[in-house]
Image (cartoon, rainbow, N blue to C red):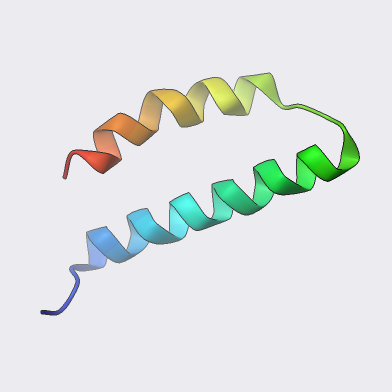
Length: 48
């Protein structure tokens, strides 16, 4: 079954966010504003 474009974009968004959070962890930093937006957005993306 072929993935929809929206599903592909959601997967790409998730992968990019995961890489960004990993990058921050390695630097010992945090981006709380982005984390807030991420955790607010993910349930909406995951429910589709």
